[in-house]
Image (spheres, rainbow, N blue to C red):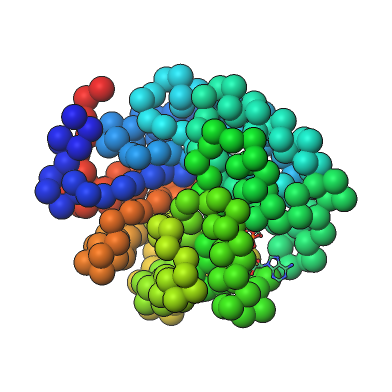
Length: 294
Ligand code: FAD
C-alpha cells in the first residue's frame, strides 16, 4: 500500500518533485540517479519543465516518457505557449497524450526577449496561460495545474490583477496551482487568503526550493519576483566555499520552512529539486516519508 510506509504525520501529505530535462549525457545520468532516489518515496507525481518557446520540446517529452516507462510514479509535463502557434502547442499536447501523460502544468512562459520585456502573444497562438488551459481542456483527458505567485508575478501591477489572472486560469479548468518559490511563509499564507477571499478554492501548493547554491539562487530570485530575506542571506554568510556546512544549513532551513507550513495546515508540497535528490529527500524524511521497495 502506497501510504503504508509513511509515518502518521506523513499519511496525509501530497508530495511532488520537479525536474528539468537534461542537456548532456552526464546531466541525464544525474537526473536518473535523482529520480531513482526519490521515486521510492512514492510522490503523488513528478513534473518535468518545458523551455519557453519549445526549446526543450523533445527533451521534455523524452524525459516524461522515460519516467512513465521506467517508474511507477505519475509524470506531469509542463507546457508553455510563448512563441508558438495553437497548432504547434496542440501537437505537443497530443504527443503527451500518446505517451501516457495525464497531467499538464500549463504556463504562458517568459517573453522571448527575457523577463522584464513586454510579452507579445504569437499572432496564431494562445494569448495567455488561461487561454492555454482552455485549449488543453478542449482537447480533453488531462488534469491541468498552473502557476501562482505569492509575491505576485513581476508583470502584475498589483495583487488584485495577479489574483484575477489566477481566477481566469481556474475558470478555464485548472484544478491545482503550484507557487513560485518563497522563503517567508507569511507571504504565502497572505496570498492564499487573498485567493480564498476572491472565491478561488483549488489547492495552492507551496513550491519549495531547497537551496543548493545560495549565490546562484539569489541571482535567479531577482528575476522571478521572489524576495530573499536578509535573515536568509545572514544564515549563508561565509559559506560560499564550504559546501558541507552550506548543505547542512540548507537542509535545516528548508525543513524549518516545510514544518512551519505543515503546522499551519499545509499538507501539499512541491519540491524544486534542481535534479538533485539529497536535500529534497532529507526534508521528506523529516516529514515522515520513508522509501518503499517497488
Ligand atoms: P500567467 O499566469 O499568465 O501570468 C502571470 C502573471 O502575470 C499574472 O498573475 C498576471 O498578473 C501577470 N500578467 C500576465 N499578463 C498580463 C497582462 N497582460 N497585464 C497585466 N498583468 C499580466 N517557465 C517555463 O518556461 N517553463 C516551465 O516549465 C515553467 N514552469 C513553471 C512552473 C511553476 C510552478 C511556476 C510558478 C513557473 C514556471 N515557469 C516556467 C515560469 C513562467 O513561465 C513565468 O513566470 C512566466 O513569466 C509567466 O507564466 P505564467 O503561466 O505563470 O503566466
